Image (cartoon, rainbow, N blue to C red; front, side, top):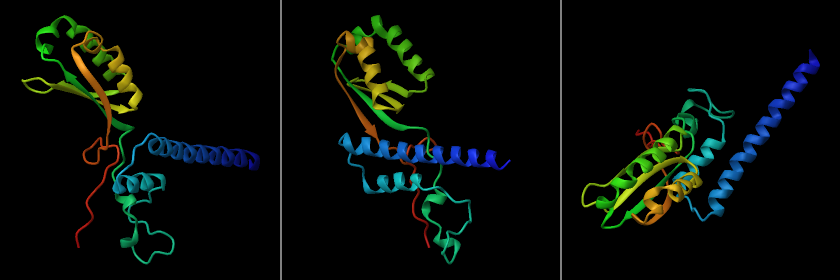
Length: 182
């Protein structure tokens, strides 16, 4: 029985080490890719890296429950960061899109079924831009654009992918709550 507990403890330790390394790699990739995060987002990432305490728990050495860090009250984050794929469409977009629309929509629904695409649509007329919200990785948005018939056939003049630091809402990647009022 003792050997089983030792093996179980080793597996737990290995998983903990891998989780810490993964968090550090993600944070390093964000910083290395030129994403200078706002201070409150850095704090949210840091808070996610420290384990949350059960509601009402007091950290060791704290005098009261009021000393519990805000990370303990933060809502759980949705899986993955958000990225906007922004299309700047040409003036002939409305006239030419019909012949490519089914292929474009099939690709969009395929990305949604894979859990990568959250929402997509164009602005009202005059249609100058379209926005596609992806969850998880910048690469998913890039792959979509490179395969999109609208892009391949020149209906989109240019496109770009921007990380969107979502902080409010049920599916926010880095939820931030206002400080409690006293």
